Length: 120
Length: 418
Image 1 (cartoon, each protein chain N blue to C red):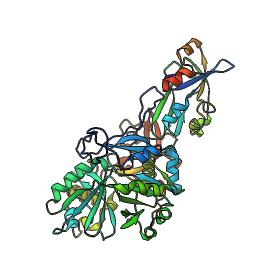
Image 2: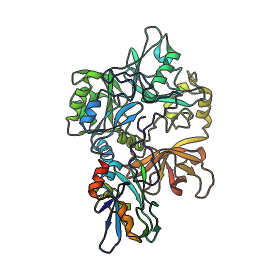
Image 3: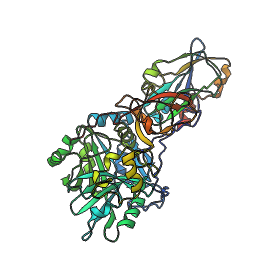
Image 4: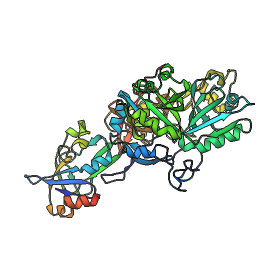
């Protein structure tokens, strides 16, 4: 698993797609999530595009595409049950899967130890 | 009256924005941090936010502290905003509202109630001893400078005002009422609120006399060994009490209440969602110096005796505009708004009459997710012709026009003990 400074996690699946979610630290800081808006499957995204909107009881936030590629699957259950983002942010509550063009972009991101250090 | 959660939309991040809290007051005074006189000697720095007598208890309970209206206040506890909200509606929540201003108005010579009517469009003379009433300070343009509670406590009035406005309110009262009336801002009493369906049973455990109080009654009763000034009122839409307690006894009283299984500490976050569902105004947001009481849909707070044709008609700041609007209506009004989808419509969202109309007709002044409603809820201002329940408008959220229905407030039924 890799981590971004924007508190996203990325995991490479067996089929080579990359799954993206937010970290437990991010979910805790956001507070109770009450709304999730997901991108359409098939959307081609560039790194830093705004792809997901999440709103907690406190505020609205955007999640950026951490990597170039095509959205091949989204976790629809989060639309109906946004609270899952707080319950299991690094497991069931993934946001989307990307078919990645250039896997070397993953190299920019932190491993778990580095991320833990980053959030202090 | 207290909390302020806003959209903090720093583009492009899993934005770990904390609550943005502001001192928006509208009373013309810059309430920057440290701009007030400190009133708790135990926090002796000259700058930075003030602390209430319960500050250490908030930390002990795991409260996440933010600055609000010049005070360090708990925005939430480990339970989290959603569960705190639900706990208050189901059982009882304990709130520290000591940041609010408690002001005593007293005189041996003048009739304090009569004098106070020069500042507010409500019937103060008719307020019986042992009763409390909602009011607002108005300005010469008919706008609202602050909203407040007035209690008739026999030989004096006790006025409770918003934290961010209290210095301006005290200055206003002194300018208008002194020297006939003595205006005293209390600096040695905390204010707690116990709210929710179990509040009566919990508080009766400390003093059974609280059961006899009806909604908006006030009484002086002993709780946990301290003389407390209690009102049966609150800011959640639930039954409950607000308790003015001597500073030195505040922590003991809070602990005695929290010892009850049904009581949890509740932060400003849930206080805001509770009052929003209850359709109650947050000063500086839903009402301010530019909104009149009629625009704010607060006509109910202006009794007949102060209206045109009443025995003490007018005689308060902005009476010309307010009396005329009470008869003929105002061009815009505060309404409840129920977004059709799941996306919250927060403060600042612009409202349009149609999906494609170029100019907005109004805007959201408070909005968020309503945990009890289970959906987003909001309040805002719309032209009076569009203030009819059932009217469908469109709120623009992230560039998209989303349907939103004008509805009556409260969003959740009030559970007062009348």
